[in-house]
Length: 110
Image 1 (cartoon, one colour):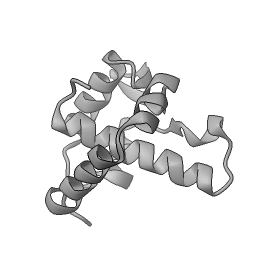
Image 2 (cartoon, rainbow, N blue to C red):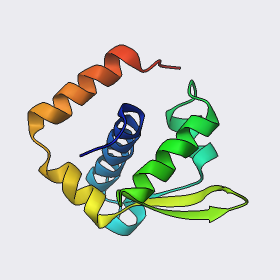
Image 3 (cartoon, rainbow, N blue to C red):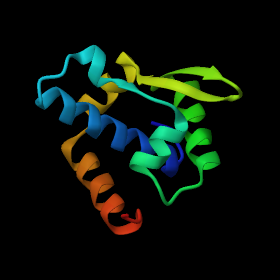
């Protein structure tokens, strides 16, 4: 996976949200859908600038981890791609735990 650390962090958080939704009985289709870049920034990354979140979402889209839909020059809607879900499902447990540890230490909490 050749992504920036910011993009990796966003992918991990979106995948974790997807997995939580699935655990709570939501369909795969509904679980992988996310709203706009501003929604993602406000709800998951309030301490990051919107521009940085948008840039990472675009990077994830270019690398086929997200399916992005654009309007007014921003990510209006996005969804985890089947490829993105597959990659995250096959990541070694250690890699995901290391990323989770990184998030806990370095991503500010509201």
